[in-house]
Length: 429
Image (cartoon, rainbow, N blue to C red; front, side, top):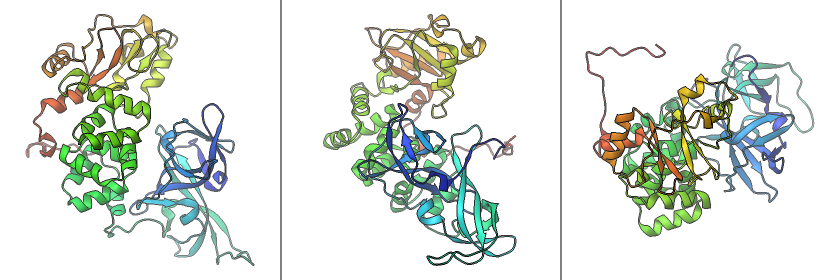
């Protein structure tokens, strides 16, 4: 972990208040949720268990935590109030890791875990446990406190936490494949037995499962979604890209569609219904409803801040769309597109409205797939705006969605290999 990266001891987070961006308290931190890894790799911090004023405990992913400082947690304000349920791959820091007896690797001596520190990885949103504060000697009890030397060591300097590599549970499989890209993990799941596939899917967190579902063949998507509890299935659909979620919903029976839509947030359900109204092989059926949208008085600095969002795909981050309010789809009047390269060439204070590529035509929502593909080929684009006849931006089509529909239906089940005589470059080259 780089010097200067934020690091916090977990004992300082017990009971601290969590606030939304407006300063209103949403609850208090009751625990931290981590995922252990095979071997001595530090665990990843998945999120916090937050107790609401109603005494309900919910899961707050770290992706929805904007800062942890001065004894408080600031969130994005977007909360899923479904009751927290611990999954097989998850461990509770306060409930399971503190006061645990572990072994120092160097000396073989048993020590007691008093505290753990979590730190944010540089240039990333991920957090992980990196250090362990331990005490040598016996256990502390209710009537006496064990005496002994206390010291802080690296996570890798102790054993007794991490998963056993020879284990066969879903948690061990997930830990082994944690570094895989969603498409590669999807390929692993596709070749598992249905029972094993369901176990692994149940153990994945919502965001990770959503990413993997987007990369799976349609039959696998339907099978996995059908084995989830309906509330969780709705949460996973909300976490998927809107166009992929709408495609998946469209393959389900009507009554099942309606049940899942009724469990989703109203705004997300409205997006799904709007996308499902278009024919599948049209610009409207291909588009996502969540491109980067800015008002004409936004600056280059504002645009670059939005582009830096690590949750955006490279295609969606390649350009921003300038529109009159409202700035959620369907927007006010669409004014034009600003390309990422243009943003890099102009001063931060420049208004995006001065940088519009006004010559770029927009797609109509009923444009057929060959027309959309021709647009991308003609203009060398990776994303394109979709605008209705009233001039409102409805969304954006990305090149990966076009390729998904141009390739054979079973392309996800085809294994792609380099030719045997091609030399594979080493990692990091």
